Length: 363
Image (tube, one colour):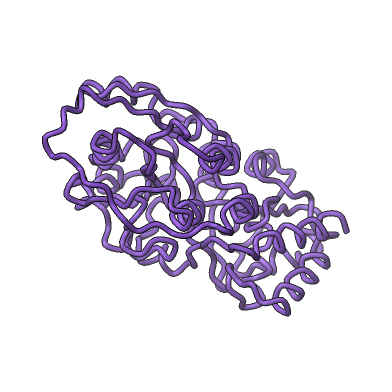
């Protein structure tokens, strides 16, 4: 198994920038007419994805299989690609990989093509639950690429399995200064939201005030807010427990099998990264063919095997079922994932989340 460096910032942003850009825009729900007889060798594709989130030979393999030349551009964060896609005019991209709530914002702005299932027969490989994602029920304008949840990654040889988010927010004396929280808006707020019994998408002012106060009270017990090196802190022993995305916890487990992952009893989120086809694309038949190519089980299984993220492709996950022996969270079922709350675009409320996070981290 080839281990890749995690994609910095892939999920680590709020929707504030998108909301500010798109708040005055209307949604789009029409699909273009596609030519079933289009010569795909006469089309070209430009894709934007996170570095390390796809095989290095993806463009070569796709052209060999379909005939379409393809160029892949890398973005570091959702915010970076959103800025390009919302700048006006033709962005030059045919397909973009963005997290679910950003796909929702793009659709509301009328910037993405509606998915034509007739041109993506490999949609049949997806779990039925993949059509139940709140940001896009039915996969009408996006196709999920990877999905997972957020929980507590911990040293099982040092502490007992944490069952509540309060293990981070109100650590015991022996764990004080030995826990970390995630730094980015949605995930910094998530533990307090869930510990208080609120939605991860709440926009209620009174609830958000309670979340803020709980997070401020929790700050003295933290070692750090850390989005990128938290699992390394577990490996070194600097931390006992950290808030983590399931896939990233696996990077720690790969170095120390005593590092395990738990979803607290109060519940968590369901995040997803998706593929969207841009409405401005002049190569929509090839773009659909690309999405179909990714959903081929042999291609989609690469993501699970090499990045240690679950994919919503039933056939692909069956091919890599053995991963769960080493990385138990790879065995989380779609039904278990759907117990988590799908993150959706917050619209005009997104800046409020950023404001709260700033107050918390600077307190």
